[in-house]
Length: 499
Image (cartoon, rainbow, N blue to C red):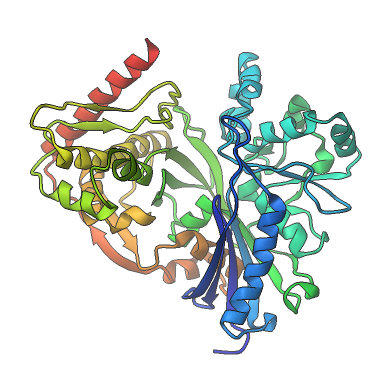
């Protein structure tokens, strides 16, 4: 290995920032990590301090070099992946944020979104951007910040203010303000980017009253975005990859062919299907998003997410105190021959895609006096699988593509019972990668493509390694009975939510 043979990946997440070292073949070397503060100034508001996050990136970069006895000259290139939709506006002269970062989870702009829905504009937005009108995305957060201060709005119109998601903000500071840019995946999550024409949409900018001067340039994921300042870590390092976190996981799972699908099971569940070069619009309100753009490949994806996956297991542990840890749920679930007709609907904060029912609430259906903690634990795990099937069935309907394998990652893939049940209910193979941190790995692949270390997306597929595969073994009749029970339980919850 040469002296200059590492890829440094910045993985800027919702609760912490990590910097990971990979070698040229995408093999993990080391990482450092630091959490940042979460601020909740009002009910439904979530904020971060952008300067704190930037300081963490700077210090973590120094730390990982020192920890591994390296200099900046040892880094071939940098890749960035980030929490999507989180919105920052900053002063172009000082680089300082004019307001705290408004996080993707923030719901303060619900009324703003409702205003445009009431005008009948959501279909227009969906067909231009692939997204629904929801506080989740960046545009309502931009509008809220600009409208909070008349002077700020005037400064933005003059071009004195810059907008970016976290990738843009970090790129600006890494390059000492020389580069104001984002990538296509992050741009496609703003509700301002036309995913068909691949540009900022002037009609939407006018509709939402957003000055075009604040927007970053939009570049492919694999691209020479710029160089770090020499004063930062001791040398100018090329930054050749940027990509949103869920799309990074898709690339990290090497789902680079049409019909390939990845599922990330962390706090919630994120399911992305590669739908190829055509931007199909879902008839059932799945999101259509840009999956990636490299030097040789471009693809769109269907995306669906649900709020409760690992979070449901945490609820069992922390609130109900039925189990001491996540592993215990696997033991309990495996101890039963079937689910005894018990279903958990984890609508603790409403139902996400494809139901979009914010008023639904959680429930356990089908309990008898024989129901114990094993049945509840199993129902909790089963709910993760049924929510996945809800989304996958719609992806198949709306895309016309029948996938043959699902590649899963995230903390819950360590539960072998859960992964086997996933294969059984979906009736497809479930593959687990040898390296589970696929978000960071995907960003390293993107940077390697942008820096010429990998020649094509085919090279990425060669470096994906399978740790284990689960094949469906459940008989079809049993599978249909179980899933029908889930749908019946769901219907009862949705009916109650409307009363």
